Length: 115
Length: 114
Image (tube, chains in turn red, blue):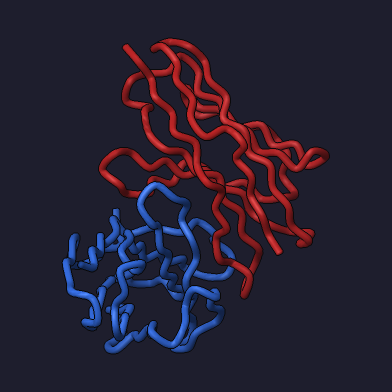
């Protein structure tokens, strides 16, 4: 069975602060994919990143960066110099391959960025 | 950029009524999914569909639920007799093939059962 744990439920920061959102996962699959999605107040799910299990290179995209550590089964997400528009619920998710490709989501982290 | 669309955006129905939620996946995608998100909770997998049949379903997806791809473009979720606890946001998603694992989500249909 697959499981995603996002232990933080709500985080509040002041604009321009850096913030890290934690994600820990469990899976018996040897090959799998990890994702982050953003859900703004409007409700849609916005894809941020996909990482496959055999690529542990960290990734940076603008103010966003992701740290994948297979040894600790973690896939953490950092927003640098946060902005009010980053306020949203952030979900980490896990999928297997082929017939196992459904997404298993964590409970989400509500990030509030105050001006 | 192609996108997944869902209609209606909001559906209000009375308990016991049947509802059909509609999705149009991206045209060359082959794998289709429905997920549910009860307000304030996590997104939960309901069912996956490939090659005109259900590949996997969760324990939430009981006999009250069914899915169909009636015409090669629409992908529908039917709830036969709605309950109050079916009130949620329902998301449709699709992926192109078994190699590309980015699931493209539709904007969701908010179902309110009164």
